[in-house]
Amino acid sequence: MFDVINERLSKFSSELRYEDIPPEVLDHLKRVLLDCYGCGLFGSTTPWMKIYRDTLEGMTDRKEASIWGTDRKTSVVNAMMLNGSAINSFELDDTHTDGIIHVSTGVLGCITAFAEMQGTMSGKDFLTAAALAYEISCRVAAPVGMEIAHQGWNNTGTCCPFGSTAGVGHMLGLTPEQMGHAMGIAGNWAGGLQAVQFASMAKRIVPSKSSEGAIIGALLAKQGFTGIEDVFENKFGGFYNCFTDDVYDVDRTSGDLGSRWELMGIGLKFYSTCRSKHTTIGALRTFQKEHPDVKADDIAKIVVHTTSITHKYSVGSDAITSVVAAQLSHPYVCAVTLLEGNAFIHQFTEEKIRDPKILEYAKKVEVIHDEEIEKLPRHLRYTVKVDLVMKDGTVFNIGETYPKGHPKNPFTHEELLWKFRTLSGRAIQDGARIEKIIDAVLNLERLDRFNALADLLSTRA
Image (cartoon, rainbow, N blue to C red; front, side, top):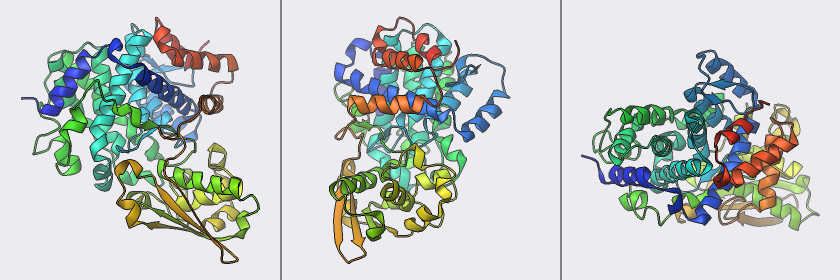
């Protein structure tokens, strides 16, 4: 018997139509899609993605879906894993605040590859599947983001397989019952370890790999294969039992479907770091603008007050051994922001992370768990307070609540396009092609053939 959550989510995922999606939801979704296609194109140029790509391409001769930023195709599962990982490849991807998931990393590589393999999708078909993939992922994660993270699980890898299943299942035309079984199959792929965050290249590939279960689960369910009907609420090995010790919220996860859209809580990244560092960066940049007379060398100490989970996510100044570690390091991020004025792609290179001046400056930074911030509502979890102690004894107390790119502090349209052009330009040198991608994504509903966009994301003529 299907549990309440699975029954509701599966019925919604099977029956949603394009016309049911509010215009403001579609607009927000398309902005997220454009941003993260850009992240994926940039990510395709990184050295760790070359290793991953060479390895996976050597394992199959299937040519079902495009590898973004290249002229090649691979199997749909490989394309899902490669393109999803590319989105996550440089800490530039979207974030749902409460769920602590990078939604596009979890679902966009999957649904794009599957739609391309199908070959019959229109832009409206894809937008409907995408709305489901993003919405279901956010709903599964939203009430329990902190619980999953504190338990040591990778939030994206645990929650997004369900969203990908909704999107893939909708493309396959699954009935509500088939969708419920697909969810119950795909849930077995949920997982990923938080420890992967702090130094290894594996951090880039873990969040997207679980959506393999969505493709396999949906295809199996289409043929009558059955899964765990009470996959979410089973008290012995169900999803929430395993990952949150039975903490969950039926109504937030499965209530008001179609009238309340959790995906509207997805924010974009303006800086190339772990999201929990962005309010600190924003506060420091604002301080620099308001106090141009204060130089970086005038500062003796920086104390960052934050939540316990952000404190856990911070790599110390003595452990900056890789680009990944630097992007997770509050001390490093503070140092490059104060010394160079930004924390974007140019601040995270092999040369920069070994720069003695930056590493020495990072030692001035202390990160502390602040109980007052910890007690704030979860949607305020990015709040930081920063104490800047000057060498002359003066102390400046600064802070920020919503990071740049958060729905309450959104990108302007110009900033969205600037980021996309900057990132995609690393993989695609043809400026006209980049503009065609922008037009195709922001007007997806006009595309008769979704594969026109899939082709543009490659470098094929």
